[in-house]
Length: 395
Image 1 (tube, helix red, strand yellow):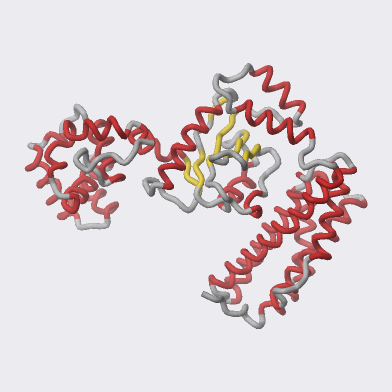
Image 2 (cartoon, rainbow, N blue to C red):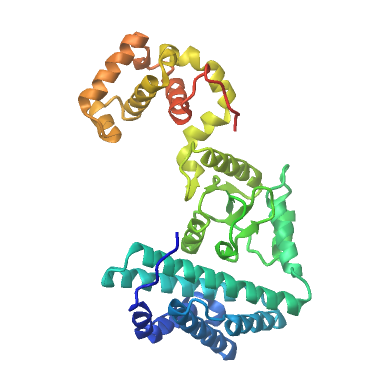
């Protein structure tokens, strides 16, 4: 469906706040990007480029066919200068990220203040990220052209380090530490692996410099240092731009393969619809589901021994009973709380529990085997299947 034009007053509103937006971006860049905090000629050049970028973006709101070549040429030259100075693109990418955060904050504030529609706000932010992806590519092209190769020696070392961190059996810590020094990567106390869907757009790939990505793996992934430590406020917004992703457990250096294995299992379950999709999920928040479905073949084969008569009911009848019993057990056998969580009447919960008691002779209220019952019910509620339905494939 063709989208309608932007509100006519939108460019005027944006231009009214252009100088204030640029000033705020410059302050944030100086505060958050140490390389530019001390000022100097190059820092001022970056700030002027940010100003030109904001001006072009505002002009493009009512002139969507505006030619971006002059702007991308600026970023090509910035990339070339970074290479000549022996720096990476990290600082420039961070400056772009900071600018985008300021812009999005101001968009949201203006949207509330002026009553913009959700569609208008979404189109503004989408246009911004598209422009950032374009100029980021231009800077990378300039950088690569000046270097005479697509990857610097440091980047190749970081790639080797990334692969070493997920190797199994794990290498010695001394070997990892030595390569980390060569790659200019501060060795963290812990890491987490993030499994990603394939085919992510370039605009979603702007990440904090300490993150080690592999975009070309069959299932792309990230190595995230100290994921639970301070300073990760920049990472999670970047992950949300990636859509469906799975964050493996936090592990010590040397156990990256474990975190990656569970992250990929979590992603596979999300893609099957068995875990929430559309946003990053943390494996630590879904331990029961991951553990149960990792042994899905075993669970399916033994379900009849644990769940018994429940499995003999048609799916339309067994699913509400299974969900009610699972929620009831999770709520400490409290029917009132279970009813609130299920958004049904308390008497409906009690009726279903009586029906389950009739079917099973009350076996599910016994302490012994309670954990097995909850795991089996979690599997049944998630998959909707029984042993008679057949397993479609274990994770």
